[in-house]
Amino acid sequence: MDKIKFGIFGLGRGSGFYDGVAANNGEVVAVCDFDEEKLKKAKAEHEGVTTYTDFDEFINHEGLEAVFLCNYFHEHTPYAIKALEKNIHVLSECTSNISMGEGVQLVRACEKSKAYYMIAENYPFMKFNQEMRKVYRSGVLGKALFCEGEYNHPIISQKEIAHYCPTSKHWRYHIPRIYYITHSLGPLMYITGAFPKRVTAMPVFGPLNAENGGGDLYWRLPDRSAVVTILNDDDSVFRVTGWSHFGGHANTYRVCGELGQIENLRAEDGKVLLSFNAEHTPEGMERVSSYEADFEPDAKEAAEKAGHGGGDFFIVREFFNAIRENRKPIFDEYFATTMASVAILGHRSALEYGKPYDIPDFRKEEDRLLYENDFLTPCYHSDGSAPTIVNTERAEYVPTEETMKAYDEAVAAYKASVTEE
Ligand SMILES: NC(=O)c1ccc[n+]([C@@H]2O[C@H](COP(=O)([O-])OP(=O)(O)OC[C@H]3O[C@@H](n4cnc5c(N)ncnc54)[C@H](O)[C@@H]3O)[C@@H](O)[C@H]2O)c1
Image 1 (tube, rainbow, N blue to C red):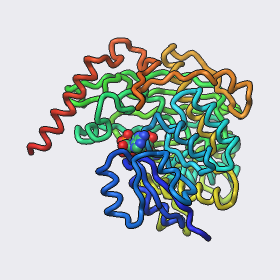
Image 2 (cartoon, rainbow, N blue to C red):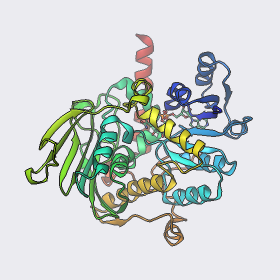
Image 3 (spheres, rainbow, N blue to C red):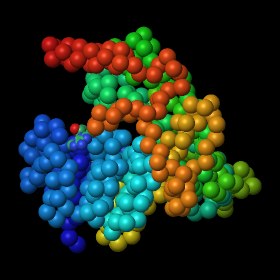
Image 4 (tube, helix red, strand yellow):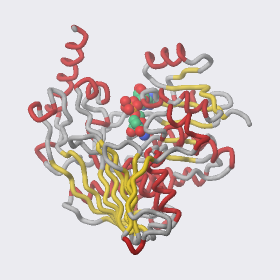
């Protein structure tokens, strides 16, 4: 089996994938970032890797078969399309598209290309989510009726904020929390196979400031999360959150079926709770049981070394398997753009106090036509363009030149204070 020649675009998150690629019989042959320091480090640590600052040169690297897009959250689509046009397979970090129009462009490019596209949604592959899928698909729970997914990842330390959001024009400063929806929604779609059809959302309001846990550096937007209700194509309902900022980091999921339910336990890494009503307890099973989920034996060692509870290993494995087996990956362009539509239209719903929005089916041309010219974005883009949709419904918190300048000054002051120490 030949090694897949792989390139990584963006060396923040992207710099953690060399081992996962090697473990799946791939080879990182090229990397690209416009940060020369990151390239120097890559060259020093990984013999033989070619470095680029320009994406167009990078995808022309001889023999390059597949790329991992780990650049800015809101700028994946144009690069995915460029790679697909050259029949280079694309693994893309979330989100697949920052606007509805980009979602349409992406599915059209995928359909024209000979290469495959996969969204690198890793949370479904955490061991408890893989176990929930196995149990759900065994049929003991009956059909899914109601499911919950919560992604609560507060970033609080001043060091982390200065690192992850270095300027007031960075995407992390501007994205509504609901835009980061894949880690709560993706696992539920993976477990049950349900696809969202309609969304309504409410923001969870709670502005940070210097006194309530924000410190000098804090996100300007007041939303701590968004609570998103989704009606699916199988009539089940999901309740999920966007990227949340509550006390007590946790990622939790729950699948309630007609006959029983399964969930992972907060603060109990890897443990699941499976329960039935007495009448529906399958023969040989306990009515209520909790147990440790585990990885399949042949993947265990590599998964345990990988980031995000093993998820980072499995996304590369699934992507490479799809390329080798000449099939679409499990999280293809329709899976990806459906999640993005939930985020984008969910945000519009939250701006309108919960007005429901239908989720388009981008397999259908008539649904694409509804959105092909809709490029509203909440972010500043690298070409200098400014947001075209507000990122919070509380007008007094919409970032202004003044608040952005204050943030930049606070980051500079923080960095200077650290250098002085
Ligand atoms: N799935 C997960 O668990 C997970 C975890 C962290 C981040 N992410 C995702 O990964 C992506 C990257 O995250 P990050 O934290 O590294 O983001 P970041 O904004 O901190 O870093 C992006 C990197 O890409 C480089 N870059 C951006 N545009 C470029 C261009 N046009 N040419 C060359 N280099 C360019 C930047 O210099 C930087 O090194 C995001 O989409 C994020 O949502 C996913």
